[in-house]
Image (cartoon, rainbow, N blue to C red; front, side, top):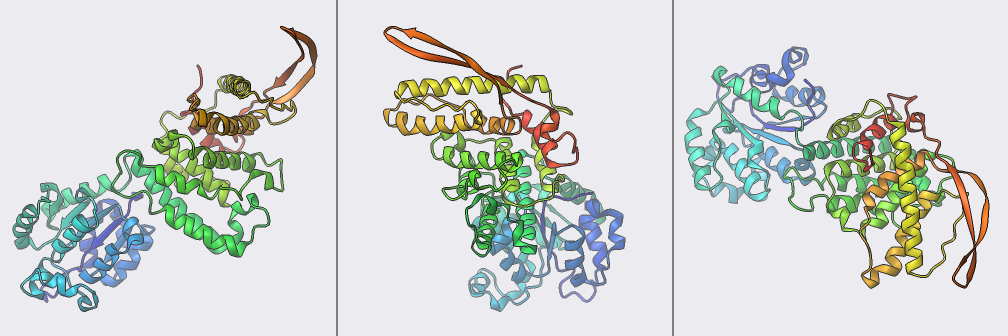
Length: 490
């Protein structure tokens, strides 16, 4: 069974009991047997120290085994480490380890009669630290211990602390409880909600990007958007950027504007210095389009409240665009992308080219009309180059003029700028082309005489524009998912 979520397991495999020479593999099977299964027999584990490395390697880092109380305290107090964790499984009676090295060891010990009592209730102390000090959700913690004698006293103590445990969050490792333990873990092995999927996808993407740029800093694709970019300067910036993104989607889902800070951090790097105009290959539709989306997202996020209320699907759209624009991932669909695409329901097997073409025409016309109306209201003549990339240029100029001239008058009508970013994607890969510009007539309006010109355009829309010929690659999967959140008229 594939595990995407990450578990912290605090277990010492039988502290200080000479009669409890616990078989390490047997304990692992009792707890994680449901997700590891028969593969456990292939792991090279002779003792608990082997188990730390083998579990981490076998599950791609998704089971972090910690063997004593002191190491566990240090782990959960490290924001970078705890931010990686989705669920925690605690033994109760634990070795203390190098307890005296903790700065607050005296304070912790003061809550107990002696070290022996602390050892017997070490898991309880970790639980208090997690829930009360670190705000880790209590419903993501499972007690799993053979020290049944401590269960009632610990449940009573936790209840007295007003953070009571439910009956399904504390089990023994005895055979009769294994079905329940396995069910608890299997249910949580993979993200279920869209928020959890997004959070996990962000972690996987950032970690993969970190590996790419550590192996070769030239994998920073973002440099192509910056004039005279220097690798030695941009590398630490990108490392900080990725590390920060990993901390902004906590395991406890925020209420309200839960993606506001994450989105602003995501697009912040696309401030003044980054621009698609700096691309050496101006015909690279993929990079040009993704860069335009990110640049516009940066500029528009500061002006529109719409970006404070993004859904998981909208946030995943911007995140996947950012990762592809900024880092040299292989063309093939990546694991983190495959996970994030689960957010989008009812993805079509094919793009409906007829509907897409009509959407391109409709969005093109409505944007042109809106921009023309804005120019009339602010009494500015807009320069229109019929051979230019009309849609992307128009929507950028529209935003600029609207917020420069109309915002101060409080005269901005609501425009769905998030949909505008999605439409930049569709238009970027199928840009309009001019086929006729010869129809011009003089017209009269009251006492004025003006020249009215009509242009004809072609929308050359094919599924191949969106990657159909490369079905295993990112673009084709992404395009079909994005269609599910495109506001088109059927």
